[in-house]
Amino acid sequence: MLNHITKWALVLCATAQTGPALAQAASPSEAGRRVFQRCAACHTTEANAPARFGPNLRGVVGRKAASLPGYNYSAALKAQKFIWTEVQLDKWLKGPRALVPGTAMPFPGLPDPNDRKAVIAYLKSQTP
Image 1 (tube, one colour):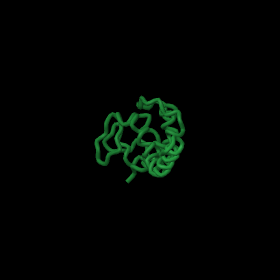
Image 2 (cartoon, one colour; image 1 turned 135 degrees about the vertical axis):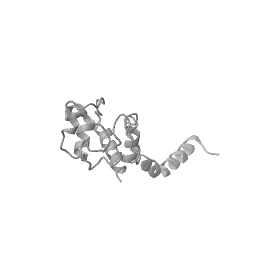
Image 3 (tube, rainbow, N blue to C red; image 1 turned 60 degrees about the horizontal axis):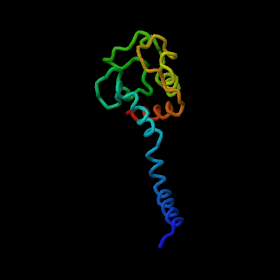
Image 4 (cartoon, helix red, strand yellow; image 1 turned 90 degrees about the vertical axis):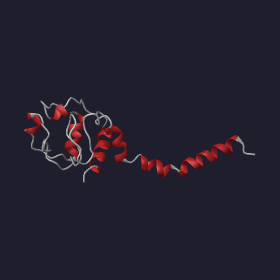
């Protein structure tokens, strides 16, 4: 018969064996997908999906700002000349209005740098 301590040891061993699977599930892009759910009301990353309230973000990494055909960007964003690099995305996600005053994006930003990093990893994974 197993005593209480032995039962705990078996549970801990079983948990340790599933550790890599859990770590895989919590990859940066997976964590980013979860954080991106805050963005999903306005944006999609689905291939060939129409824009929602905001533009489709599939392939945004490496794309020129305000360049997705068929989306009506604010004048403030259209005036920008930057490319959506990881650095620019981090600045944008931290505070869109701080990066581009006059933007129409109502999102206040993600203050947690780990959340921003995860979302950027997710967006990179959605780049064809």
